[in-house]
Length: 165
Image (cartoon, rainbow, N blue to C red; front, top):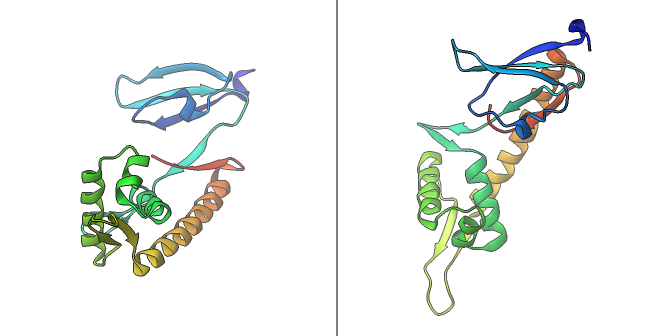
C-alpha cells in the first residue's frame, strides 16, 4: 500500500496485546515513544480502530460497574455468593467485601444472605437489587448506543467494544 493509504493511529494503552487490538497483516510498524507512554501504530488497509469504554456509577468512590454487575447476575443464577465468586475466580471473602462496599455506597441491600445449617446457606438478590440490575442494564445499553452514534459521527463506520479505555 502507498503512504497516502496509510493512517497513523495513536493509542493510549496500558498494555499491548495484538489480540485486544485485533491487528491483522496491515501492521507495518510498532514502537513505544521515548517521551511518553503512547504506542504508535502505522496501520494500512483494514479499519481496525475501535472505541472502547468502561462505565461505572460513582457515589463517594466507585459504587457499581461491570464487576459487581456480573457477580450479582451470577448470584441470581446460582443462589450462592460463594458459587458466583468461584465462577469468576474470585475468593468468597473478596466477593463478600465487594458486595458490602457496593451496598454501602448505593445505600440499600442487594443480597439477602442466609447462613448455612441443615438446609445450607445461600444468597438471593433482593427485589430492590433486581430492579437496580434491570435499570443498570438499560442504562448501559443506552450509553452504548450513544457512544456508538457519536463515534460513527466523528470516525465513520467502525465498531464499538466495551472494556478498558
